[in-house]
Image 1: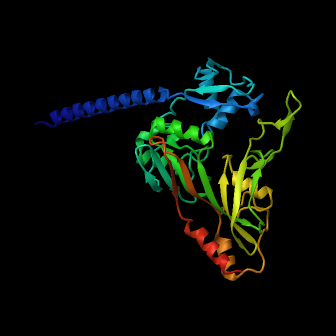
Image 2 (image 1 turned 90 degrees about the vertical axis):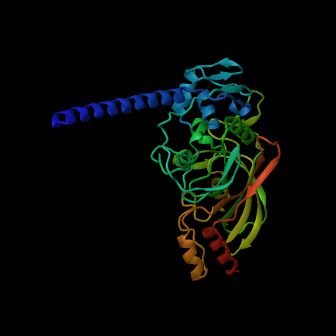
Length: 367
């Protein structure tokens, strides 16, 4: 065979390879387009009087906390949102309260979140759901400025089929430095069921929290939470009320939402209290905000701790552990829910992680 013939054959082979590669890319692009345009199962949300006067898009942001407002507005404009069965295409539409919102979400673009081999622990798994035991430092969901190295990225790597579910099946979140259990749905039916349970407050969520100062007894904190008016990274207790048509004082839901936290004392220490905390509602930073507001902030919570809050007359061993504990002392120990398939109540529990356990054990010697 001549050199010229070899070159011609190489050229033909390269052309064929390029054609196949281009065709594969086109097929993949078409597949992605189908998935991006795929509508998911309709979800329904019941509003109440707290939604009076609220914009439609802002109301939906609260039901879809991990979906951007601009994306939700695109759903509304595309006719994917109904109010009491009638399509409403104006994001600024003002609600009267007590309506039923029906939403048919559209899949997130396939390329928006990348699958990554992120380490995370599966505490339990079946055909309907996954219970994840989240470690400290793991962000649950991608956000502006943090699009990678999240639990969602790890879930998509281990369970590619979750890409077709809203938020990759994640039903609720934990803060980056909070540890413990959260649930991920594996099917559209399970996702719808679990989201509905969460909205109806059917989940049992119990946390272990270590707070500053000594509390006398357990109690319930019933204080509304909203975005901090000056510091946008923080939430705050905002007791902002208005008067309804009957002269009754009601919460202004455009600035804050009802937030209820129950707690009981597990153990008292010198300068600290170990608590068992149960959420009735699930607002952003709820436990952290509530206990900071009543002047018992969580140990290690740099966002909500007053400056220079440091206990006196403690051992050197404790001071070393205290200085090295650089996250909020909060652990989601127990998670209970009604199983989407069996209809039975099931629950899971996980131990407090070593860093927090060491701090608690050392406190027991400080008495």
